[in-house]
Length: 286
Image (cartoon, rainbow, N blue to C red):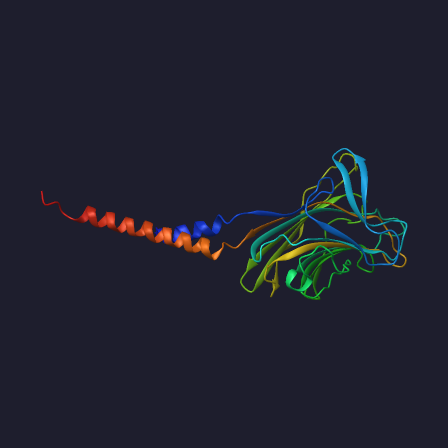
């Protein structure tokens, strides 16, 4: 059986017990993380907080409205993540108006590099195809020729399109879970979607689907980012486009000083162990 030295074991323990930070939290019912709402398009209305008046859902964010075309609205959050992290989960609920004659263009989720976009809350224009430089994004597209897919984007390029497994435009709040893990040379991305079968006042959730599993994004080094969302209605496509219950949790890399302290403690423990072993092996003179 492989024997691990106390130094290796304690350094591994120090890496595993790095603190977990819930960095961005916003349900629009309590104070939560600071955010900014921005209207990029010319169409009315701007982003709005809506009182739902349903049990368990008090308020939510409407980034696109069903009565207006040409909308492009965003919500951006202030930077709260550490400079570098090795694991991140992003949870949020999203809703696209039910399909009829039109559904809007779609929604976008983006992680903005703070060295480029700053740490304040305002966000750039974000569509269902979030091809922004120095940013990672996920699109929820419900219009066009392939009018029901999610897509991955990094540094201004589209990485792939994926079947979500159900109709995104159902008029109900579905749940998204996005996971990022730092790996050598980039990051791995997983997207899990949980479909809401309704009704709105009494949600019934189906088994989760995983349209994206451990997708490798070359060159994407998880570093300090801030989260933003966007909604887009086209010249002849419009729908209610909503978000709620946003929560991001990250696990940072252990601080160098913390690892140094763990290393010193490990060396001390190893030295005590060796001294004790020598004492047991030294024959008594009596």
